[in-house]
Length: 285
Image (cartoon, rainbow, N blue to C red; front, side, top):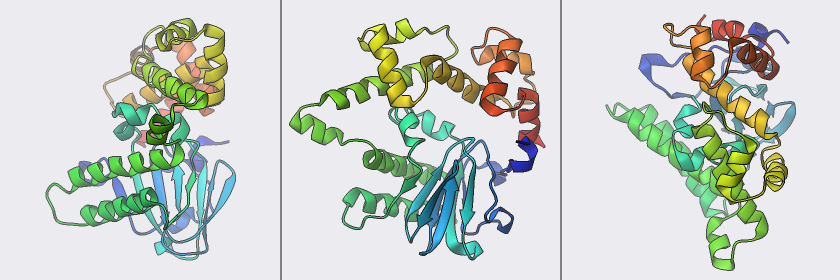
């Protein structure tokens, strides 16, 4: 796959970290593309659709498609104002420990359906209205208010996508819920310490389970091996350094936890399908 052919270069105006748009670029109707940002796609009417990583979702009013960094996706609609689009770097979520710990699960939750009988779902849609209202207001602190609403939105999405922690506390934590909690802790620890020489044994000991049991749980929870997850976190960190023109590729490799430029190049190409230099060029063109 040619990286430049499918890459969408998003522009965040005025130094903002968040884009909100009431219109979809007609060039991307039914066209598969990707970008290194999170995108929340809110359907404004019935009969829309979205494809994320080759899975197609029919979307009615207030249904949501979620796209994470690097996901191949496309929108399907009859007119440009069929969606509300919210775009932002994943770092805005990852900086919050509670959200960072559940990102592996959230990244597999690509569609959230409207449910008028669910108070959490209703609160989530209210957050989206707040994001839109604040973004298009003249409030000098509008970006702060948008960011606050965005965090609340993903807290709501987390409550919808994950088993209820309140219910677990009330009824006694099940084995499955306990394992999920441990793996969330492990993922957070790996993300926060990915520049270190972490080992599977070290992280297993930190969450209090055996090495073999941890390896099995981790693969089940993240759909990735420990090494692949650690590598993905390091590459995610490397991507955040790419826009800085003062950093050379070799500097980024070491700052991201890789032991050599060759191991960085090899891992990056395996995950992204291109070299770090090629990927960086698409981001700053």
